[in-house]
Each structure stands twice: as C-alpha cells, then as structure tokens.
Length: 334
Ligand SMILES: Cc1cc2nc3c(=O)[nH]c(=O)nc-3n(C[C@H](O)[C@H](O)[C@H](O)COP(=O)(O)O)c2cc1C
Image (cartoon, rainbow, N blue to C red):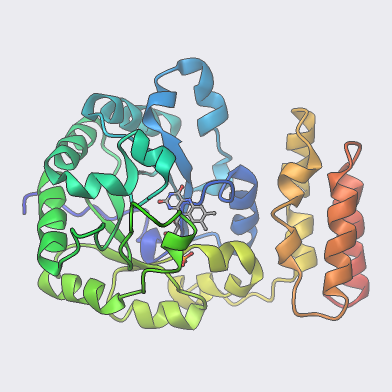
C-alpha cells in the first residue's frame, strides 16, 4: 500500500452523519451542528456532471462555515469529471470528497455510478487516482459489501485493496449487499441483512486501512461498540429521525464537556440561519421540515409536531414560527 493516511480534521470521521438525498441538505446539517460540533457531516450526493456547469455550483455546493468538518459526496464514473469535481470541492473549502459506490437506485445505475460500479474495480481505481492527483483533500469512498452475485469476502478485499492502492483514504462500508435488480433503494436498505462480521473480517485482514461501519447503528452505545473494532461509525436514518438522541456524541467520542442540550435551545440556535435563508427568499419549511422530528418522547410531542408543521408550511411563515415553537417547549420545561 502506498498512500499515506492523513489525519482528517482531528479524526472527525469517528462519528459521521451519512449522506442522504433529500435529508442532509444545508438546513439539516446546520441543525446537526447545534447538536455536534465535531462529527463529520456529509452532503447529499451531488452528480459530478452537474458540477461541470459553473452556473449550478453555488446552489449545489454552498455551505455555511459552521458546517465544518464537511465531506462532499459525489457520484460519477468519469475520471476526468471526478478529478474536476475534486478540484472544485477543494476550492469550495470542503474537508473531504467521498465517492458514492453504494447507491442502488435505477436512476443512478442508468448513469453507471453508485453501487453498480462495484462490478468495475479497475474503472473505480482510475477515478480515485484521478481525484487523488487533482486535490490535496482526502478522497474517500462509501460502498456496500457487494452487489448481486459479486458478494464474497475475497472480492470485497480485492476491491478495497485496489482503491487503497489508487489513493482512497477511508472506506465507509454499508454492512449489507445490494440487489441491483428486483429491490428498490428503500428495500435495499432493509431487506439484505446487516453483516457486521464481514466488515470486521475486512478490518482484521487490513488493519492498516481506515474503515467506517455503516448500517443500523441506532444509538450512541452501538457506536461505542462499533468503535472497539472500526475506525469510524456512520449514522444515517437514526440521526435524521432522532437528532437529539445524539446530543452526547461530542462528550462521548471527542472528549468535549457534557452538555444538557434541549430541543428549544436547538431551535433558538437555528434562528440566525433561518434569518439568512429568509433574506435569500427561502421558505421556512425548507428548514422546518427537518425540525419536526426534534421533539419526541415528551408529553404533547405529537400535537407540537402537528402545529409546528402546519404553521411552518404556510407561505408567509417567518421567524416567529421558531420563536413560538421554542417558547412552547420552554414553558413545558424542555
Ligand atoms: C433517504 C435516504 C437517502 C440516502 N441517500 C444517500 C446518498 O445520497 N448517498 C449515499 O451514499 N447513501 C445514501 N443513503 C444511504 C445512507 O447513507 C446509509 O448508507 C443507509 O441509510 C444505512 O445507514 P443507516 O442504517 O444508519 O440509515 C440514503 C439513505 C436514506 C434513508
């Protein structure tokens, strides 16, 4: 193995929030930053070809300084377009660029990227090499255990070896295979069973590689266990559906002082971001749709969520929606 494993912003990757289309946009990332200052946040997947057109870059790439450390996830199969994307990511200030090799959707397959690229390790290695040569920021990958019948431990190890040789600096492994035909993306996140032991076997065989475990990590305790073996734990749906569940991660995983963050504090912390968004003619719902799940497990949570959704979906909704929602929670001691 020839590549150097660079430290990535103080090993932010120990805990990360997975890339999720329609979920991990700027607003959700700023929300997560109220909860953790240290974990690595991924963007939604951006298609490399779309970045080629400079007039679309602001919309696709802009992020707020508080979102650091942040990784841009990219989809594509062209070494030259991906190299260009890596250069752009670095210029834009991203801390890392991550290639999507795990998405099984039909749309992504028809563009020949995502999980179907696991059948073409030589091409992926060329992409990684081109990206690594184009940028100084770390180039990382996210992939599955395998696809369809290409699903043995040996193939997985060979795949990872080839990409490490080409310059990939970290491997986020979604611990299940994907069936490219017959299952849709949602089914591909539930039906193929999780096989943590296969990722552990890979780490055992390649202890020098940085390997992040992804898939089904529901609690901070599960991440503590994962980190006994792996270099990182990546959380997807459980971060999106239960953001406040993760309020102790800076304390547990990065040695930061304890905090007793509440939902109302998170909401108040988002007011400057909401103001910026409104100033740019954005709608409150763009942000508020991610906040609905913030309040759970307390008396009246359902009613709070219903009212909050109704009010923040209105075209004329403004900061008052957040202020009122925070006040209601504070009055109830949250
Ligand atoms: C709504 C949704 C969108 C997703 N979009 C992406 C994506 O853009 N790129 C990607 O690599 N994975 C994507 N994923 C997969 C997640 O990153 C993650 O691998 C998967 O949800 C398993 O982790 P979890 O069990 O912690 O949710 C998506 C998952 C969900 C639920």
